Length: 630
Ligand code: 6R9
Image (cartoon, rainbow, N blue to C red; front, side, top):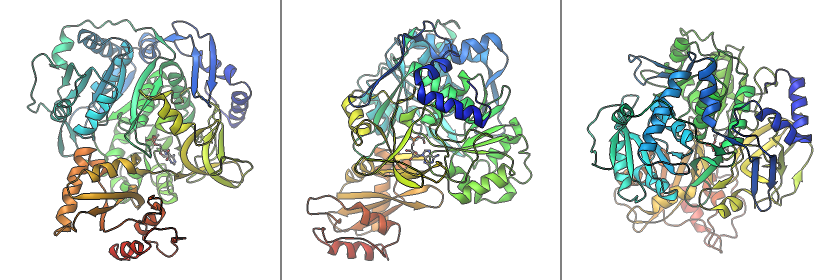
């Protein structure tokens, strides 16, 4: 399944388009199946339904763990680097990881979990997080990992949406020099969750936490009383593996559902080919397992590929801005995968943080989550890669499950800020706003995909119609990504950013509607409108226009209060960077907010606002411009 040259890529791509079933059957053979599939692919993009490897039976953990524990039990699977660099790193070999996963799967079983149950995981980046995820998969329980930065309210919404039966968490967490309560936040969430029967608490900080009899149990106690042997549940290829909530342009976050067979095949195939992973390479992905990048490229992809992977608990700037480079030096990392926001931030700290670090082990650099600007690309290439490591700028989404458009390291010629070419099996198309395909090169359009790949989103949990409406109705017969895209003269793709109301803040997707809902919950707020604006470090920042019942007498204090409300309702990641109080919003006669104008003001570029004659009250525009100090 490993492509080694440009010719092999061209050949694989051609085959994947001409004979997708034959192509993916060939790739899928390299995994552990309990029973072979009967049909490789059935699909319908109009009345959305996709099935890959129908009839195939498997358990993903047998491909991730058992087979490697049998052939290379003592090879490290995960090297865990703690927040505090004075604490020892921990290595989990494939045999140890299998034992710990099996043991914890038995704990879940003992606590009532059976195949198909939903389990919420709210944990910091410690080995137990990866173990919890894999233990769910071992039993066929559907995990829903909620990023550790989300608020109690956001956790509760996610638990309730999928009726989770068990929550797995820790007492507390450490990130940089901050202590973060975890169990306490879960306790707050559970006040409004009736489906949860058990909470399993692993200790990390040993901070005092309340433990309710009959509901809350300690991880360390539970694992003492179970066996280290747990047979892997037989799963259908199309049984759900996990739910991961993500923001869209409307309403509450959607539970993106991925299934066992296709996801396993695609996450692993792309891991091996994009990074050109060779046996023995040390790979370090800085993402959090709370996001899709962590699911596919810390847990499932690397483990199924039998890789050695570094998992980091902390933040890039603790104890100082050289931490990533220390980790690379310490563990002799060969492949490093991070986000542009981290690159831009570390770039700003200057060379003293990396000039004396030995980065010579590096072979491949990766980027994910948002467009990488040329300045950051060149710094990454020159200062970190010393001009000898290809940068793989990987474009993909929670919904795609794996990398879609990206160079293959050392195979595809790279160009700064271009994601370059589609992976085998991926058929991108650009369409205009009317839905017509834009053919040829040197063009721009909305990015769609016209043919299914194995890890495409299957549904949104509990609401298949929403999945159809969000992804398959904007353009007939195609999956719509929500991204704008350029295809240059050579057929290379460059992602230009979201074309919908999603803001990409430090590589995290935040829906404007979600932030507006949170703002509108603040006392005295009548209405609000949120847009993104260019931000030097975060890529995009959040700009909020707020109408209050009365203009606040102490605007700075009110802004701080509003930020607290947003932190409570969603989490600190959704806090606006800028708040402007206004008396009106630019609305059309039909009541639609003209966000284009708000974006221009937020960008501080009001030279060309375009046609505003359709506004109900064009006067508000002047007021907003003045209020912004422009
Ligand atoms: C994997 C992940 C998806 C959105 C996506 C796009 C943006 C991701 C990118 C990129 C330009 C890249 N995005 N990778 N934009 N170049 N290499 O990030 O998933 O959190 O669902 O975000 O992120 O806008 O639509 P997710």
